Length: 444
Image 1: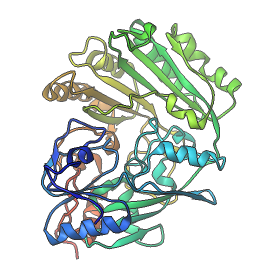
Image 2: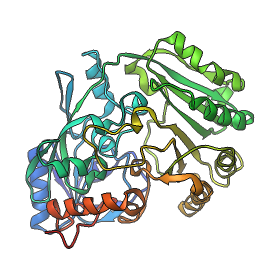
Image 3: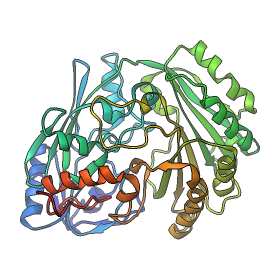
Image 4: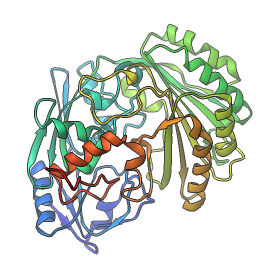
């Protein structure tokens, strides 16, 4: 085994640290894996000692606190190979490295807004990309998954082999084993028209309504979201945005700049922008569109998918998460539809592909106690409930009970099937230190 660390050992706390800092975890043993063979050894060690197992790459999506067990870290597994339009990446690879590697082949991955996110965790959660309305979910492009299951065996799941496992991993995440490598199709993208428009506090209501109305007319080549972000009144914040509750409209358009300019004209006319970064850019600069903070911090977030964004809903968003909200909250509204609504060739775990938008709320735990954050988010999502169609596990961040989210996220039919797959590959529920799916007890 490459490196095995226990509490008190030099390097233990450094190895445990990740992007999400607000969820307490204290494993008995950390295995710093450098290869699939190390992962196999770690899982077999856990089985021999009857210990649960968790996996961690970048730590963005940590959702369940735990004490004890084995934590396998995979960030040292950083291999990337691209051949015939297919990328093969090891478990610890981040999107920024894939974006750079793919660009050398005139291609791009279905990566998200932040290049520092790990490929595997993002993809197993579905993967809502900057190119999603044109090309669908990142999970829909996966062609093979190599995974170590609870019996300590390295399996290869594809549409033709280990089909149930292939289905369950793409949406069921780390309930079924530790993925050591992913293979997925890349897309022929090198440039896009993208960036953001930023508007101040006084424009929030007008900009929300304008973006909602504009979004209904957009072609598949346009992927967009709107962020409402309370900006601190601090010197590090650019002067026009300092102290403002900013509405940031994010644009990723797969077309020429002239057509992009024409399409966004109604947004520029909605109010006077405080900032405008829209331009034709190489895809290698796509992380600048959202320009999200790169430093680790503690946060809680939740979400719903919704069938529409009517005026009552926009009013509720402003009331519960706007400038006068009791807890500072970032809200993200994502435009769905397009290829995200198309049935994929090889479906993963289902979600409501007819939903029109997601509504996400995120708060930093340093800004308010967790109990207050939960209450504030609860009021927002209660107000949206009449139009809510589901929830996406990939956008649930922060401490919550291991079994709390599964029944809210998965349909009853999918949850039954997931439980049956779990009973086959992990009957002892070894991989339970996550948003857990319990193995079916009557399987077989």
